[in-house]
Length: 290
Image 1: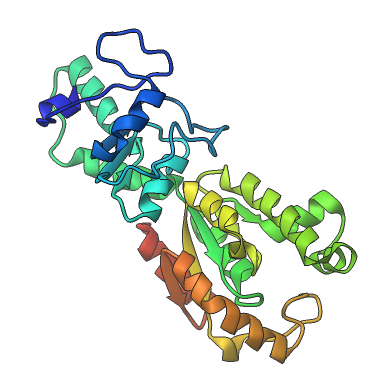
Image 2: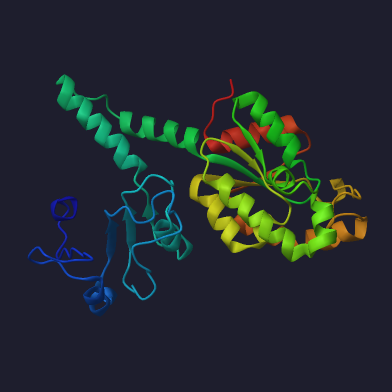
């Protein structure tokens, strides 16, 4: 109905089991996908807890200009992320959910809604539901800043390294020693997956969490990523950090990862104190801290 009202020249409805006149199958879609400009997903495919699924793969949709997904949990479905990673505008269903509620209220009360109320509710709801995800080098202050944000905002703090220790009974250093880095990274990916399913939380990740693309995609589904960059000179080696136990190790890791952190982050936070980081993050996240 929306596509028609906006003047779409051709509307194709795709179904696993096409019965209605004009419906086509996903196999038939393959033959015309190079002509498709807009994809609108109205199926539940990709909804939590099956958030890693998608109704289709957009590879080969060479004329694609936009993607809309009616799903709002997670905030960014795999389909939306596929499009955004290719520079194609894409949006999930949270704004539509807000507009549905406003329209229902208008119909129920007979009173028109205030001008701009949809945008205000959407912005506030998104800021409330989106996780604040802290990424950055070992020792940059993710746990400290996360604790400050928790105290200020009253949000739950999830530390993925702590999750791993609670699940295994071993510290990251002990896991590195017994199972190597690859063993630790697999445990880390599982912790990231579980943490990313939450909403409205603060997530402090391990320094190497963003080295796996699957972790970045998971964290983005319900969160915004903030790179805490204190600069190499402020990072102090400690023996309990397997990849940052010496000044040389820190320098090497920083050179390897700085570009990765920047490319993954929605915002880069340069700070000298936890309070300064807190203020910058809250401002970027659209939160009022008084």
